[in-house]
Length: 394
Ligand code: PLP
Image 1 (tube, rainbow, N blue to C red):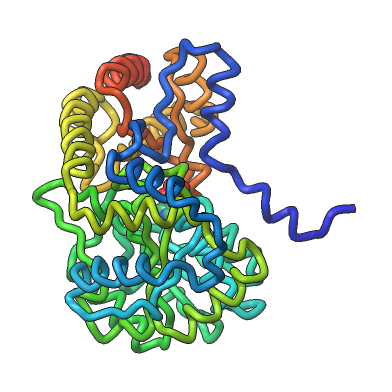
Image 2 (tube, protein in one colour; image 1 turned 45 degrees about the vertical axis):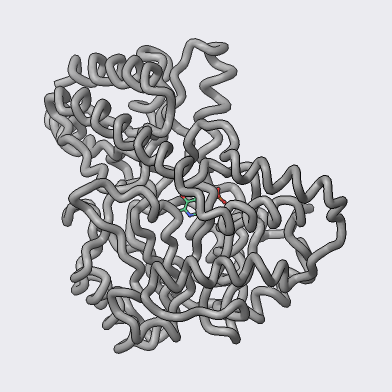
């Protein structure tokens, strides 16, 4: 008999549709589900890994991890937050997912509530549940996917411990503006909340939109904020499992203590590869990816603007288009038919040959997420198929 908590593990994961797509039609499907950019390894990262192997590096770095890497990350975070950070305020994690998990485990007591704007990246509520907390969902679709301060405040109870702030947002592609962030920061101060600030897509802000660290907007929230980030999205390194946390030393130490009993050290070759990249100061690869994503976004928006009953998505940051199918659903309902978003995703897969992510994975019954970090020709083909299919519905 499995532990009861395994029921919490069953939340949908983004890999589902991709796997189904691959097996369903053996390669005919264009996969718009990826949470990563498809790319070769950054030369600086490859070089760093090779040097580390040639140096025969093989010792565990312990739960505190490589000091030089934390120092390099401290310099990066200092530049991004306009404040000075030291290595002991930083933890290296096996990707940002582990960072988020460690934070939930370090902060939450059983029954503690955590506010999560909806739609949300599906891992947030699952991890909070595993840590014994209760996710409290706050809808945002009616406000262009930006949480309203009044609605966040109304959701706060005596049990509320934290709020998840994910900007640029997965899945909506929305970037919170400075006013929204300042408001959230003030709410956190007034209600004594932690802010779990996931800025994993921060390197992809599409002009005129700008991504800010919440700490640069409201410096006084630093003592109650945990920054979760990594280079896995900006450098297309999702297989090299290095992420990081930055925050108050007490929380960071607790996450390291937890990590010492779970995964222990992070991979030493991966840590050196990242350190080599950061020390190189070479931004060419990241800029190339950013350019690719910008081009993909422009191409995608021009195709998606031909959708008749679906608004053109915001796509302010990250590399996701999030389609709002509310109007199609409303029209179907007026004709006595329920348009289930999982069924829409299945039709797109089977009829149009395009794999997409259903909004139900993100707590939203009306959205479909399309990832555009892929090859431009494939993207164009996939989006043309998708728009042709959706435009036949009215
Ligand atoms: N945070 C957000 C908002 C994400 O979308 C993801 C992955 O898609 C992560 C964290 C985790 O990133 P990684 O896959 O590098 O662990």
